[in-house]
Amino acid sequence: MANVQARVEAALARFLPSERIAPQRLHQAMRYAVLGGGKRVRPLLVFAAGEAAAGDSGADLLRLEAVACAVECVHAYSLVHDDLPCMDNDVLRRGKPTCHVEFDEATALLVGDSLQALAFQLLAEQRLAGDSGTQVEMIRIFAAACGSRGMAGGQAIDLASVGQVLSLPELEHMHIHKTGALIRASVALGVRCANAPGTEQLARFDRYANCIGLAFQVVDDVLDQESSTATLGKTAGKDAANHKPTYVSVLGLARARALAEELRQQAQAALSGLGAGTRRLSELADFIVLRKF
Amino acid sequence: MANVQARVEAALARFLPSERIAPQRLHQAMRYAVLGGGKRVRPLLVFAAGEAAAGDSGADLLRLEAVACAVECVHAYSLVHDDLPCMDNDVLRRGKPTCHVEFDEATALLVGDSLQALAFQLLAEQRLAGDSGTQVEMIRIFAAACGSRGMAGGQAIDLASVGQVLSLPELEHMHIHKTGALIRASVALGVRCANAPGTEQLARFDRYANCIGLAFQVVDDVLDQESSTATLGKTAGKDAANHKPTYVSVLGLARARALAEELRQQAQAALSGLGAGTRRLSELADFIVLRKF
Image (cartoon, rainbow over all chains, first blue to last red; front, top):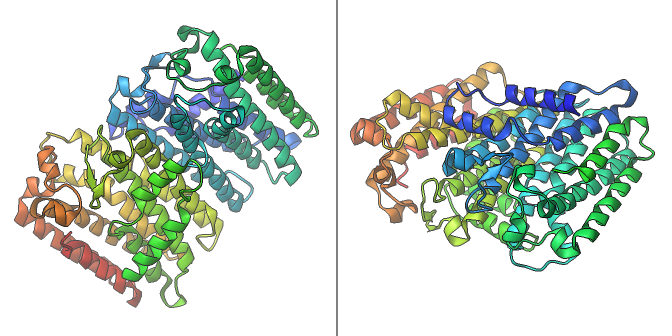
């Protein structure tokens, strides 16, 4: 994992425009928002999925690197916009002042806009699949995951949920979009970097991604309740303070923990039948559920 | 022109998610921001460029429609974000309250984010060129035009220019990014919807696009000075009030008008040698410079 994280960090530093290129302040802020922080869970999933799908023929690491960086750029942009005063109004992220605090609101807005564009540029700048038709399909999947019926739509549902009492299916619907869409896309794109996996294989990878996408959010909610701001590197207890429904507020701590464990087992079950190459995906499912930050 | 405008309006209404699909309020706001307004200059350029490049073999109108809608979605998103309080803080656009006034700031933020994603989805959802490799190249060109070294970067330069005295080259540098990048991409993508135009042809189309991109902004600055808010459908005299440098503040009215006319002639000159199919591009150059709103 540390290997992939270091590789992705170096690739991001290379793909992001230099601070010496105009507009300097914007590029400085983009690098601030993306580099030197985060668990890089989505890039890890891209690499693990790509290696699992490639099997013995070996994964093309340059393809996976570009996809991982694209996904991470979109994740970072969503955090920058999410932290803005008109959204969650947060001041701390990855243990540092949020982008609009360190720079200014207008710059943070443009950082997010530019990072989304950069992500699509990365997906179109080099060969990512056996044929260009598959590459176009990867871009389509990714765009849908980012948009109003994916991640951005999840943010809108999240906004509308403040002060509401949600049922478990409603909460799940929100998170399938807000967190799940990009995690699912990470696995879907990683798999497609390998040459032509079969339909049944694709469905199994997708089932795995769905389970860990939800598990990721359930664990986030548990940690938000249990951990300190120092451990998390972001403001703890924020959702409760903002009257946002969470898995903990809907289920209570014990049942939320049990749900995460159930999802972990479902994710592991989805991997069976996909061959020996899925070891990293399996480890990631464990990491996502058992992590402490 | 009215024909293409009506066609694009209908296509946008079809491509934008219905207000009946969740999240409803976000989709309602996206439709509010895009439909029923604007001159649709960029879509007109996409169609005119596509027809010019296709020549006698005839343009594929479904391809041009998707590209035109993608470009217009990005244009609309840039206006929504540009009007936010942390940017230009404007309340009037296309004769209506701006998106964050009609809805709220958080929704307007997500509208912009979602429209950018939708644009890339449109570019990847159907076949747009003779081969998928060209389609990936189109997406790359478009992403670069949207990003920190294109339109979003132009906004950042614009922000940094408030209260500054710019030279003509500095002003040009700003507008080549802010307005020019997307106009250039409109022509570049329209041309590539036709099958394989030659390198020399591509360079001529690009020269035309560069000239009208700048001319568009020069005329905008002249109109901002000369016209009323009612005529423009957006707040007139805004740049002067915000202490932003404009072609009028740098050159004065008469020389700004002369520059627009010079750029119009250069655009027309670039079209010579591209065959009879360029009539619409030629008309658009005239329209862009001679328009009154």
